[in-house]
Length: 429
Image (cartoon, rainbow, N blue to C red; front, side, top):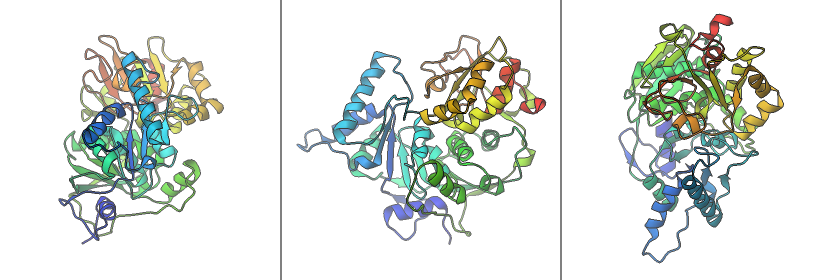
């Protein structure tokens, strides 16, 4: 009987010839990531050693990444103090994959990991953030864990009592229409599956559309797999994965490509014809409340956000600039753009993309997650309607339970910025 990709990864991570869905294993971890919530992990980690007389040392400082991104620059004294504590811990433990609030190497954790070559195919990656699912885009089994679990990983180098998940295979064929993007594909899939439809499963992406999709697009769809309840999303590594790691992420070693068996057993197989998709939106107040743009076009909006770990990469910013070039954001709209990393910010700056956006009236912010989770840099007023390329629209998600949040692609966001209402980007194409 063949094995899914995650079964193969976990088999290798425990040194056993084969595992199957339902087995309980304790795989070694190849990369463990935390952001500001690393302060919580430190508390749990130090508790493990209390009363033992042993020095609290992480199992392997080269396999831990700490990245400030959720509240940057710090919005409060409490946050600043927590960040100070994480800085001190990273220095004490010799953690080199530490990305502080800097204009030359900072950014959102789920962009920093891939663009620096920290994630490789066939590896086990855990992070104290639910959107750690993003890194399945590079063929890794990547998923979110809590602070207590992460403290255990820091201590042991493995994660305890992991049930091997079943896998849903998604076959995507056909060409996406112009201005229909990977974000539209994953929103469509979440709408089909529902917010619980992939609970405790892995979504494994296949098909012609995925094979031709950039790593950026794959990061988008894996990022939001968790919104269907999935433990992880994963794209089997291929030529595009190798190209990205060598050409963009600076990986010099040979990339080991691991793929599922042709006769792997899946819990479910879903077929998607990408050529039939229209732009999609997740409507308030759940991510699976997905509607085609025709159903919501004309809705007035007050604030538009382009960025986040879902859609803050260079291709996302470029398509927004392409739509806005030589035009102006509507006067009744605030448009905020958050490049996903300092590297992306610099690239967009050097090629003039950010200037195009600013000339149109957009405000370009530093890389970070502030408005997505609603802590700063873009709070919504009572009754405001936000249109965002972020990944969640729960009541109060962007800081105000009296506001509404619609999720969309960068193309829809940019087209809507021009009109002040939800607009199909294909209308002006």
